[in-house]
Length: 254
Ligand SMILES: *[C@@H]1O[C@H](CO)[C@@H](O)[C@H](O)[C@H]1NC(C)=O
Ligand SMILES: *[C@@H]1O[C@H](CO)[C@@H](O)[C@H](O)[C@H]1NC(C)=O
Ligand SMILES: *[C@@H]1O[C@H](CO)[C@@H](O)[C@H](O)[C@H]1NC(C)=O
Ligand SMILES: *[C@@H]1O[C@H](CO)[C@@H](O)[C@H](O)[C@H]1NC(C)=O
Ligand SMILES: *[C@@H]1O[C@H](CO)[C@@H](O)[C@H](O)[C@H]1NC(C)=O
Image (tube, rainbow, N blue to C red):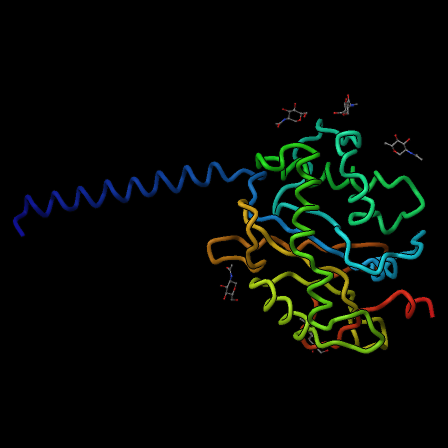
């Protein structure tokens, strides 16, 4: 290679490197606290939720209900966007059935939805398909119906019972059915017990609302896992090697 040609290539390489560096810098700058990459659709098991806290739970439903639809990053993104139950009045019967406030069944149910909207919905609203209360709650209900977790578990023969399941069996059944890995949370064993209790199952969606694995891709930072804390008990990622209790109401109130 002649020196002039070599110089040309060096210059070229430098410009390209500079370009990449500029691009990555721009990327970092747009990565504000409110940008998120995936949505969690969290289902919780009302019987377990009731077991976690002294409250006025009465006859918790024996099907998985919605806990929330959460971006993986950001909370309370717009404090001036207040919850207004009138905006979701058309969704009311589905909301009552599939998204009940399990812990406060006798109080005004709208508090739970208000909390979910203000904490998570205002952040999810950066997507056009979720940019109103009606769209946010409506889409969550739609995703819940689409996932149809209750019938998936039934089809896999996984039912509330007094005997234990292997965590890996539950996980494998879900992964086989959906083709993606959900995030499953449990109440750890109580003192002197050996079994954990399943409490929450979360499915992850892309911004295009396609199912994806909940495990982080290599390119993504792994956010601190959110724990649901009620009183002194809290849910955490289930331990694959512990027997797992999937309680029914009848057994809890025995
Ligand atoms: C916050 O919500 C209010 C009320 O909907 C809206 O007018 C305002 O534009 C929003 N702000 C941002 C930054 O999105
Ligand atoms: C709540 O929403 C309804 C329907 O969109 C609207 O008519 C009403 O003014 C809103 N109330 C408040 C306090 O913003
Ligand atoms: C429940 O909340 C809604 C909206 O915040 C309100 O209009 C209604 O009066 C409340 N009902 C009770 C029983 O407090
Ligand atoms: C999810 O992860 C599994 C491996 O754990 C992989 O086989 C599958 O293709 C992934 N699915 C998606 C939608 O990324
Ligand atoms: C899971 O449970 C096993 C058996 O009790 C224990 O040895 C292990 O440390 C637990 N793993 C985690 C991550 O807690």
